[in-house]
Length: 292
Image 1 (cartoon, helix red, strand yellow):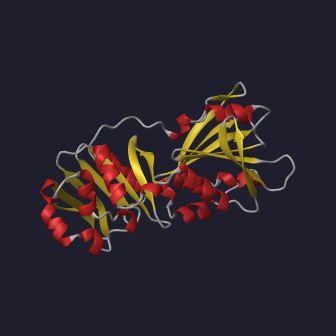
Image 2: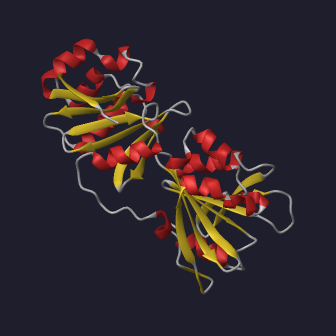
Image 3: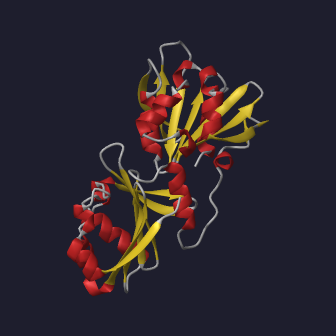
């Protein structure tokens, strides 16, 4: 898709204030620029703004504030958007991105490099586009562990086969339909509650001969806690309780079948799912101790 790119002086931007008058700005990405500048102790002449616009709306906005650093920009913007309690750090393509959670399904994404802050939101950028966008912005590109590599390679002395799948492949194969009831998620419902397409999903498993020891779900631009909540809503007829296991906060799912439990653990941008039908004695504690 071709994007139209335009730039504006700080004075032009402050006079028109498009972030308040334009429907392209969702509330989560609507920081008052005067407040933003005041938090940085800067004025309009220190500011330059640009955007890249697609036919259906803005894909990304860039704010350059002369004499600032990346961390300052993010903190000032979050503060100006009155979003401090709803902001958290996630990793996308190996980069630190600040996620601002708003009224579902809207989210804002902030990434800063040197004296430029880039802002996008889920209203115009879906999961696959967000990955592409973050990858094309300037800055160092530290390696991101692939989702299968965050899974253990051995468990209970047994070597695990680790595989990763694109969301479109996983949805088509629907392997979770064969999982035990406590973790048999209705995947369309899971993705629907996140307002994300299948292409935003990546799944992986660590597989032993008798079945998957652990499954990992990652949805671009969604943090692990949100994945966990949506996953629980998308598994039918279960009750949940939180427990400390191996020093980790784990959500335990119970469908009423004796001896059958599901275990859900969120870390960063990934949700890990396991069940008692494939885990032997002591393997759950070993598994959790090896997850990030």
